[in-house]
Amino acid sequence: MNVYDGQRIAAMLESHGLTQTEDISDADLIILNTCAVREKATNKVYSALGRIRCAKKESALFGIVGCVARESGADAFKRIPELNFVLGPQSYHKLPEIIKDPDTKLLNIDLGGLEKFDELPQITKSPTVAYIPIQEGCNHCCTYCIVPYTRGRELSRPYKDVINDVKNAANTGAIEICFLGQNVNGYKYTDENNKLYRLSDLIRETAKCPEIQRIRFTSSYPTEMTDDLIEMFGTEPKLLPFLNMPIQSGSPRILKLMNRPDDLNGYKNIVKKLKAVRPDIQISSDFIVGFPDENDSDFEETLNIAKEIKYINSYSFKYSPRPHTAAALMKNQISEQIKSVRLQKLDSQLNENQREFNTSCIGQEMLCLCEGPDKTGHHLLFRTPYMQQCIVAKPDYEISPLQKIKITDANKASLRGEIIK
Ligand code: SAH
Image 1: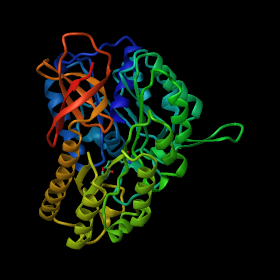
Image 2: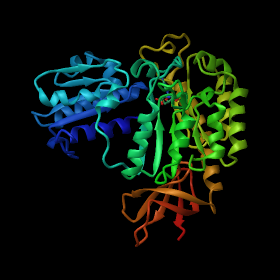
Image 3: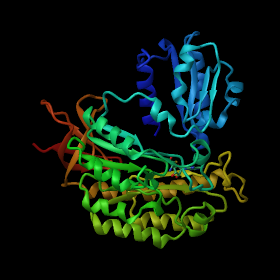
Image 4: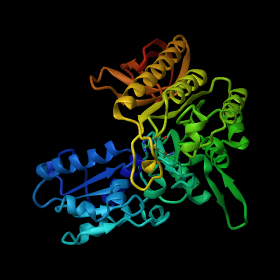
């Protein structure tokens, strides 16, 4: 989501005549786009602001946008008095005001709904992977999560607007569409004729664009995986056989405390249905260890589910207490030391899953999307349909971005392969 927001901010400022520089000391305007989901991310923002303050030109305007701006509000000006603007994730379309009047302090952390989408210019050149937000905010209120506070209640964008964005991306260079939302599979839009549109409708319509070869979406909520969406994995070959469907914990007791779906059989049933329609599908998850009151046997259950579902490409985090969340006030907070030990154990299970899956890919042929050269310039980096990185020797002829690659080797982190001509 932040990559997308960054692209839109850049496009908006370019339409006001600004150009990008890589050099902070040369910049007239410096914007830090921020994430508040864990405390570490927020801390990083303030240390980065300290560095920017020293490196920037005296006259340069600087400020923060995104979730830390929304969370900090006017306090951000107290902590860093030189800041010129603090704009929440739904008000960054107000940025041009600061260029017009550099002497004011611009503060806007309102939850403005979806109006920013109407005020931002269309992208004229799309990257090969186009991120397209279809909804923002979340109504689920997981007790650890700051997102309902920073991004607000769930709002779905009009179906026609999303399809316009898809067509625009397809016409300007996109090959892959990644639909985005904090609760992406909860997308629900009812038009003026009372017709309800779901994510499955967006996927079906997007697949009709000949330029678009791959479709994916993130982040999903387990119980929003309705049958119409599951069926798409069976009927729409452009939808990648890979799904991030976070479980967070394998303990029903902890899931209840998290206010997450705690019926593990229900979750496993969704995985079963997905495998039935798309036998080659792989699932990834996000995990939180050290949630308040998590004991050793709760954690064992998390290890067991990671092993049982054989998640690939997963993310794991130590629980981080966040302002405005219920879990931050719960009793029996877990010590950093225990969190670290549990994270290490979980990571070694997740790494084992990853290594096993990567090794099983050796010898297979996969249609992969080129992301560009590696640092040495001698190789090209591709993404497989499972979002694994695949390193390929750079050919001495021009290639199109989508290539059939034979996987020749694998380790935990990446694959190696050869282009099949
Ligand atoms: N569905 C949201 C959540 C993203 S946050 C979205 O797409 O915007 C990504 C992951 O961060 C979550 O799935 C969860 O595993 C983790 N996370 C969220 N809040 C956390 C917290 N307070 N402490 C630790 N991890 C957290």
